[in-house]
Image (cartoon, rainbow, N blue to C red; front, side):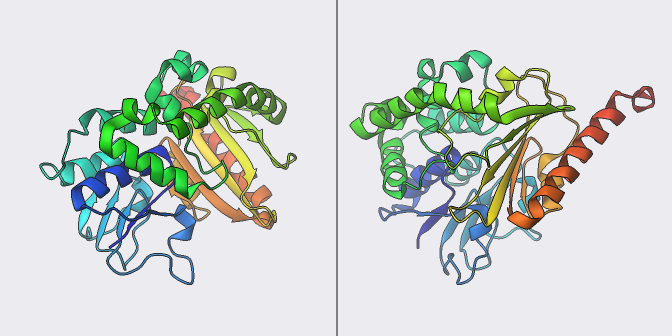
Amino acid sequence: MRIVTRPDFDGVVCAALLRDALRLPGPVVWLEPDEVGASPPRVRPGDVLANLPWHPACSLWFDHHATHRVEPPPPGLFRLSPSAARNVFDYFAGRFSRDHAALVAWADRIDAAELSCEEILHPERCLPLWVSLTVSAERPRREDYWDHLARLLGEGGVAAAAEDPRVRAACREVLAGMRAYEARLRACTRQVGPVAVSDFRPHPETPPGNRYLVYCLYPEATASLRIRWADEGRTHVTLHLGHSIVNRGCPVHAGRLLARFGGGGHRGAASVRLPAGRAEEAIAAVLAALAGAEGAAASPAAGR
């Protein structure tokens, strides 16, 4: 039995909880959503899958993304909730060696983007958010660090993890890169109707940064579309679509919109990985759908 989850903060917390509840000390398998159905198979019979789309080989499945729903529900817990970690926490209630309630509450808040501009602009003043920013699919793959952080969080929570030298170094790295990321973000972002579009493809590397920063810099936008190369060979492009956490009210379900192109996610945040040749058509379609929905919502007839 292996733990298979996604390399984001919610996934790391899922790994911490599953290790404790199931007493699984081995390394975690870290996958992106589009890798779950890859050939040859990355998911094996008996695996515990969390924060990822369901795979028929897994023995237990925990997720909360609206577009990943499976009927009838397989073993585990699928439920629309602020985080996948919340579903793991509730399913295994009474089986943990320590109280993880505070850790899961932060996973809920961070994954649901219930954050203020003050916290976004100064993550060093919000320790759980600061630690969470050291884990991102947009940073170089660091499986050993993700495993290390999951173990620390499971054993002592965020405060204990933040005392670890490797975690402290990763936090300092995030903070040091924030100004460079802000400069790159401003250079690569334009507002198209209600959407702040950040296209990082002209740059071979993008400094790591806070994905919520765009909403503080472009408060008039109700959504953001982030575009980046998905691989070093530039054969695929990843689109990240999100609702603003500053100017709330985007009427489009982000997960369902990107599901049209093979992606998925929540109402407020979703992603899709596309062959480079399909990217421009998809970007245009996404922007048109967002502009059309905003226009319909703002029309007098929409309120009748």
